[in-house]
Image 1 (cartoon, rainbow, N blue to C red):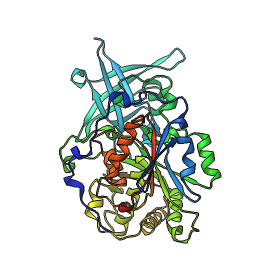
Image 2: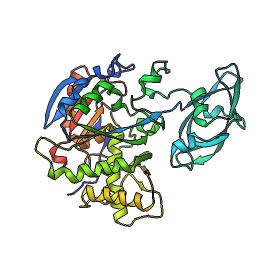
Image 3: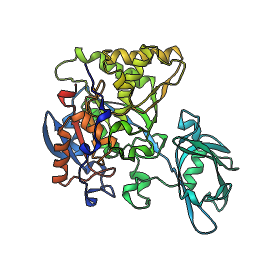
Image 4: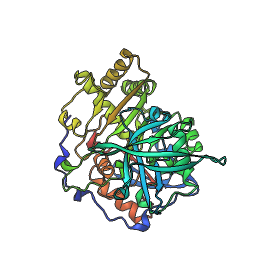
Amino acid sequence: MSMADPRHIAIRDYSYSLPDDRIANYPLEERDASKLLVYREGSIHDTTFLSLPEFLSSGDLLVFNETKVIHARLIFKKPTGSTIEILCLEPHDMPDPAVALRQQGSCTWKVMIGNRKRWKEAYQELMVDKGDGSSFALRATIYGEETTGPLVQFSWEENITFAEVIELAGKIPLPPYFKREPETSDEERYQTVYARHDGSVAAPTAGLHFTPRVLDALAKKNIDTTFVTLHVGAGTFRPVKSELLEDHVMHEERIVMSRTSILRLLRILEEKNDRPADVTGKIVAVGTTSMRTLESLYWMGVKLLSQEELDKPLTIDQWYPYEKRESAIPPAIALNAIADYLAEHQLSQLVATTGIIIAPGYTFRMVDVLITNFHQPDSTLLLLVAAFTGPDWRRIYDHALANAYRFLSYGDSSVLFRNLLNR
């Protein structure tokens, strides 16, 4: 099993023309009414998302990302009338955003700041309406700088958590390509129906199409489900601006996955060779975030088996898989190493970080099928799709453009079966 190094990929080879009118600025009235492009063994088929269960088999396992989008946009208005916008990206020095969101009184976050040149004061202050006729002050102070951007310390005297503060004070951070402010409907529609864990600044959009009736149909067909949490950062929207991929710095994101889910994946991997012909046992990633999580799990297991950096939190940087490209460790062995690690340390869940970049040349270890939307040109998400489908990615996107598919976060969906050349 070999893997090519994608550092010298020219991003111009993974671009296409996306007209503005093909970007879906609003969702359809029914989540599962979206179009679904099915790609399998080189063929392309058009249907609707409601029919997704027809293309999966008994014994398959769908892996969902149950992260929840937070009200991460905070807009501070200055006495002059100008505004300063703070986008909360991730907590500083806390591996689990859920813990940071439970902080009371103060907390520090890595942020992006809009109109920063107008920030002349020691701090910014926002009066937050509690909805009962009273209010309290939220204060923001620049705490320091990191290579990834500024740190801001938030403080408030109300006896509530930071999650409650931003729920009252903030806005849903819609993707910048929408070019509109969030509306009331976005509060529901820019979340998956199974979202549970606060922490993302963007929705795992492949999951936006799922409804209770689709999930029920999957269960009736004996198609199993399990969950991971990868808190999506703003970097997911960042295009690759460098000519060559080696000059692009991939954003890191936090992963939380229960030991129960890891054992469920391990069981699927161990049973693959013993299944009846009509029970396929495919691992289906719902979205690129689930894909990045699942493939990162494999490399974390490789790290553990190699006795690498066991005194540090588990982290996969963007080039690690390519540096270890000749790894012949079976996926089940890698996941078993993680399960053993959690048991040894009496941990009920894995908390880790990944900056993995999946691009053409990558050899997939975990995922057989990918459910995903249609992504921006010149993006790492498009590179991931190209890695999974091979050169057919362009035929898939040309077909979608020619057949009135809607693109990006509120757009239509696809179910892509891994190209045999990438096994």
